[in-house]
Image (tube, rainbow, N blue to C red; front, side, top):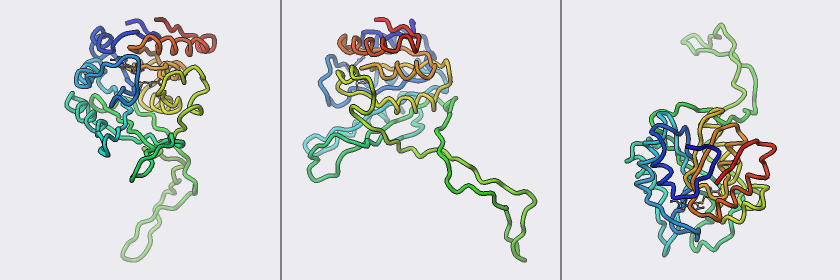
Length: 264
Ligand SMILES: C[S@@+](CC[C@H](N)C(=O)[O-])C[C@H]1O[C@@H](n2cnc3c(N)ncnc32)[C@H](O)[C@@H]1O
């Protein structure tokens, strides 16, 4: 496979050409529920899940960002159907995270609260081999004596323990959507781009430098940009020529700084 490249084709063709156990991480957002009118649409989720399983290295992960549409007052539950499909394909459902939108697009949701999140599923092939969790500081940071309560009262133990200064963040992630999610104006010619920070956070969590990242629905090229930025190798598939052109133009702006080649 040629890397640093977006293949202009159905991802099934790209996946079929890959060796087995090839990719460290796939991060993608599928074209679910006919939610938007993309230029091309072909989405057999069972076949894609099964191919992704074959092509993911043991310990590798698929990060699958998906939501549900409400049709005639009834949620499609597409997200959960996908999770079950990936589990049946052999993956573990390792973590179900929430991508909460700070500024969701205003819409009349009828007799329900404003819809403001999507799921970020982490499907893993066995136990994930890499986990570099995002950390946050713990505010009250002070040394404390550890002790044991005995029948005769409190017994201080010999060693002082220092309270941890930071902890793993929770699995609800808040991101801006729309024009504040990327500085690349060209990306917004695509109707549904990832927030760059979401992709950056997930790639740095589940991979290390030089690992190989794939996006089977590359759209405007957010995964390519962030993978390159973080020093990961990458490639992708996108069925629409218009979006591949957008992605390549978007990546071209960074060519000098990021030193990569985005070819069609
Ligand atoms: C939700 S968008 C992905 C957007 C992307 N995450 C970004 O940041 O721009 C889904 C994309 O999948 C593409 N697509 C649909 N079916 C495909 C297929 N079978 N193979 C490759 N791409 C496909 C659509 O053209 C669309 O650009």
